[in-house]
Every structure is written in structure tokens, then in C-alpha cells.
Image (cartoon, rainbow, N blue to C red; front, side, top):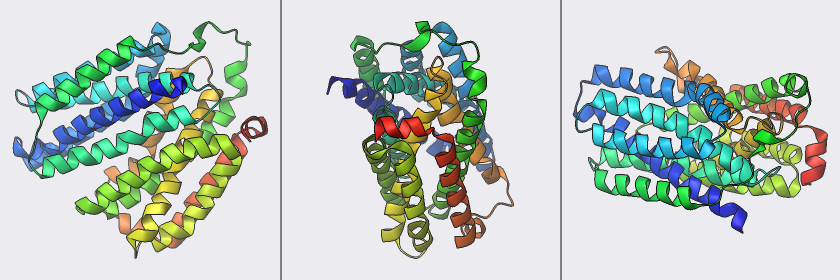
Length: 346
């Protein structure tokens, strides 16, 4: 039970941090022109996702992921304050805060449940729900700055007081440990990017439907928590492959009914903690960097098609494309997650 206190707390902080970022981005149209909003959102994405690998490397160099978490939370609190002074500075602070917090929080969550994916699930689940809540507050023209700052500060103090797990920085390492796992890492990153692309398609399709977005976010969050524990229970390979294959018909039918879409999204997102933890297993000395590659670079790569003005989510949501991408993702995960991991966790 003690092992999950830290990842649960980090998950709550993740939700509040992403809620703050979503609120800031969603409220930009109230203070700047619609033409400037697109540039601001792009800036945030570049910093929040693209900068994560660099933030992860720096965090691992300093060997202090908790410092990264605390820095991220206080930067996000500063971003909330800066929204009323300078929207550009607010977006800048929010992007940097997200990058630093994700790698630090991801590293601590991974280390708190070594060789288990439950910690990654508990940490990552509240993020998407937080973004949805932040977007909803922005649409409703509600900006509870004082509440968010108080929550971010209180969570930072609580995380500072918590005992952190043993970190892997001083563990012995073989000479070619990193090199021999390069292929596995690349395949896993590709799988994460492909899964993220499918997730982005359905997010775009439901854009503007606030109720559906919230329901989808809740399904995604629940899927991550359940997937983390289910992967540990029945084996990472077996669970990931089965979840993605079952998700295919549900997501296809989900175009016509939200009742199929919600469990499909839950299954799609449920493999996230398994993939993140499997990547970390191959970068044992670099927990923050592995979190940055998983939560940042690979997700950013999965969103690249969506920066094009010519992109049509409806066009790419055809059954053939969705099926092909998810089957390919399932195969890549099955190949890249070593068989011994499945045996350990089966």
C-alpha cells in the first residue's frame, strides 16, 4: 500500500498541473486574437512535449527527479499568475513546467514500483482528465486561479515531505547495456507514437463536444489505471496485445456510438503504462529520460500529422487505417517486450 502513495500523489499533481495548462490555453482567446492562439498552442506543445527528452537528460544528470517535480509545480503556479499579466509568458512557463514535471514525476512513479507498470498507470491517468476539466472551465469562462495555486503549492509541499524510492543512478551497469537495447527502445517508441496517433484522431473527431470529451477523458484515465494493474497481473505482452486487438472493433463501431467508443478508448490508453515501464526497463539508469521519451517525444511524434492544415481526422478514421495501425502497434509491442518480462509479471 505504501508503494502507491507516491504515484497516487504524483498522479493528483499531474491532474492539477494539466488542468492548469488546459485552462490557460483554453482561455487565451479571451486576451489575444484567434490568430495568436494557434501560435501559443504550438509553442506550448513544442515545450511541453518536444523538450521532455532534454529535461529528462538534465534531470538524470542531476540525479534529482523530485527537484524536477517541485520545479514543474511551482512553474505551473507561476504560469497561472502570469496569465493575468502576460499571456505569452504564461504559455512559456506552462510549457516548461509540463516538460519538467512529466519527466520528474514519471521517473519517481517508475522507480516506486520497480518492474511493475501500476505506478506508471497511477501517475499518467489523471493527466488527460485534468486537461479536459481545464478545457471545460475555460469554455465556461471560469478561472479559479487561487484554487489552482493553492492545490499546486500544497501538493508540492506534500511531495517534498514524502519518502522517495531508491533511485537507480548508483546501480552497477554493464558496458554495452544501452546499445544492446537500442532496437527494443526504437520499436517501443514507434509503437507509442502510433497509438498516440489513433488517440489524436478520436480527440479531433470529438472536438467541440464537451460532454463527449469529458467522457472520453474519464475512459482514458480509467483505462490507464486498470491497464497498469492488468498488465502486471496477466503479463505485459499478453495484456497489451489482447487489449489493442479487442480495441479495434470497438473503435470502429465507436464512430456511430459513444457506447463502443468509450471502452475502445479505455483499452487503447490502457497499454500506456505497460509501454512506458517496458521502455524504462531498457533504460534502467535513466528513469527521467525514459519518461521524457515516452510522455514527450513519442507522443509529439504521434501528433505531427495534426499540425498540418490539410489533415482531416475523419479521413484517417476509416476502419482500414484504424485497424492497420492498431494491429501494427500490437505486433510491435509484442515483439519489443522481452519474453522474460511476461514471465516475471504473469
